[in-house]
Length: 184
Image 1 (cartoon, rainbow, N blue to C red):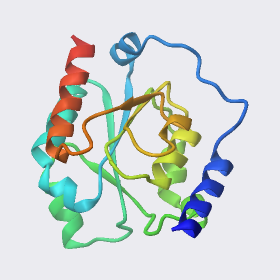
Image 2 (cartoon, one colour):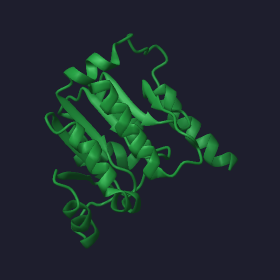
Image 3 (cartoon, rainbow, N blue to C red):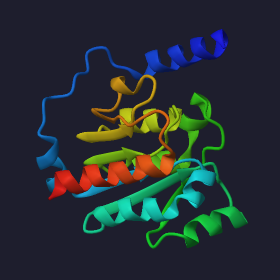
C-alpha cells in the first residue's frame, strides 16, 4: 500500500503546476455557453450496466459538440462493438491499455484528442484515473467536473460529492439532476 501511495504522489507532483490557479468563474454561465464537451465514460462493466443513465447525461449536452471517450481498447473487440451499440453518439476509444505515464504520453489517440479544445470535461469514473488527470492537465477546459475522489481538487474545479455508500446508478442520476438544474 505504501509503495502505491508513493507512486501516486509522484505522478500527482508531475502533473500539478504549483503556480496554476483557476480564475473564479460562473459555472452556470460557462455550462450554458460551452460548445465543446468531452465526457469520459467509466470502466467497461459500469458503462454497460448503466448505459441508460449515461445516455441521459449525453442527452443534456446533445445540442453541443459532444465527444465521448473510453479507454482500454486499442483494436476491434466484440466488447468494443457492444459498448458502442448501446449509445446513439459515437465513442472514441483511446489506445491506452495501461495507466502509466509512458503509455499515456505515447498514445496516438490522446495526441489527436489534444488537438481539439474543450470548454467542459466530465469525468464519470468514480476511481482515481491517471488518464483523466492527464487530459485535465493537457486540455485545460474552463469547467472540469468529476465525482469526488482522492487528489481531484488539484485538477477538477467541480467535485460532485455524493454519499459514499450510494450506488453508482444513484450517483449518475444525481449528477444528471445537478446539470439539469444548472442549465435551466
